[in-house]
Image (cartoon, rainbow, N blue to C red):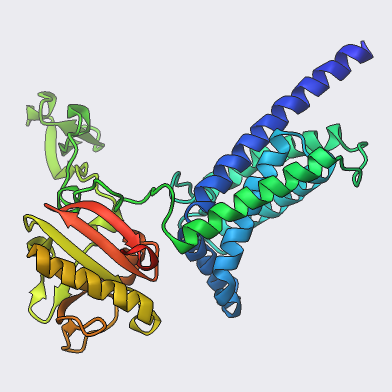
Length: 373
């Protein structure tokens, strides 16, 4: 009997370990491939907890924390330094369970960011997800609690180094360039204007309904009817009280897409630019002060290429233009600039400065400034 129980517990621990590993690997990967998005979420948490002084380290935290999560998942999956990593897994689950409880109650956030932009969860959904994972981490820790904590084979050392290099390397690469996988609505192949105005068919049972409210003259109680009911037509019994429409929105547009707007001194230019046929080079500048000379030189080459191709090139920036709507890059011809919301620009291009190319309104290319050729 004890042997059977022992085997059952080992099987349970194996299943818990695999589930924990899969969760950590998925969660770590979808965040480490987008260190910019994770840094934005970390900035939000730092502001909530009054730690704005650490904002300058948000990218370091982003790459390190997400890379460590991915690394921990890989080590759990392959049972590398299993006792030590089971302690880290249990400690992290206790910490994040408490953190998400705070995020859902006293210091609420709109989205926890635990799965990046790949899967959106509310703080309460995240908290309950952690409540499920917490006992799994306890089982894994209990299963390997008697293993030697500091006895590592050469193979384990090699795997640890490999997992560290892979996890952190992915984060650094995506910070210096662009996310390997783009989970945001402005990914390649998207027609921004079409998506902004997209609607999805709504099933008939979810369409808007007119509701008639009538009062029973005998009992005085109110009752609701739909138009296709006939009972309410009995005016000897029913007295009209109110009519309302239960609306079901047909819009299925990502809020970030719906907020995409370009303006200059002449007003809104969003539709004109996004529906323009042919190619458009959009030079994206988050901060002109961070536009270094090598980047400005690459943008000059884009302006010259646009002139040769006889296509439009514009500049997008969230900085106030103050009536100055043209900008030259390293001596190039002046480029017309449009204002865009800072959050929208950071969502569209995960870089301080870079390039987004439209072909007939469709995003065909995106580049960090250092990758512009």
